[in-house]
Length: 174
Image (cartoon, rainbow, N blue to C red; front, top):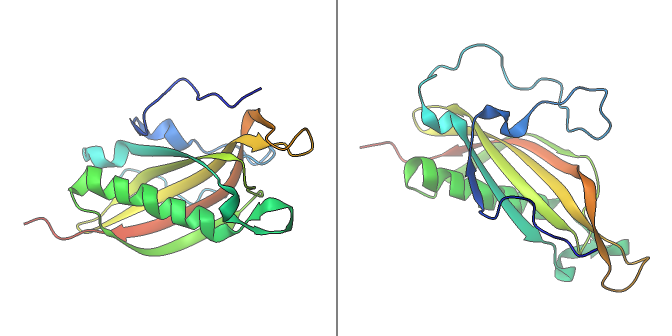
C-alpha cells in the first residue's frame, strides 16, 4: 500500500498541549521519558507560545543512509529537530533564533532510508529570550525492501524513533 498522508495536509499545527502527550511507561515504544517536564503552573500561563506545536514530515532519502542495512545515523534526526525549531522560532518571535543546547536526546528505534518521518516540536517553556522545546521523531511509513525494491507500508501506529528536549534563544524584544 503506498504511503498516504494522514488527515492533515499542512506542515504547521497549533494546538493545545496534548499535542505531545505523555504516554504511560507500560506502553511499548511509547516515548515515555520519565516525566521530564516540571508539573505545576507555567510561569506565563497566558502566553500563547506555550500552546504551539509545529509538525514537519519528510521522506528519508537513500543519501541519508550511513550504515549497513540502509540505517540512518542519529544526526539526521537532530538536523530535522533543528529545522522544526527554526520554524517554531519564526512563528513565536519572528526570528530564526539559535539552537543553544539539548538537555536530553534518546534514540529509541532505527530510522531507515525510504522511511517517511514526522517531526513534532512543542514549546514547553518561554523565558525572556529562551524557549524550551520538546521534540519527537516518529516513523509513519516504513520502507520494505524485503517485499520489493520500492516497497513501503503505512505503519498502523507511528514508531517513536527519537525524542529530545532542546533550548533555543531569540533576540530580546525591543
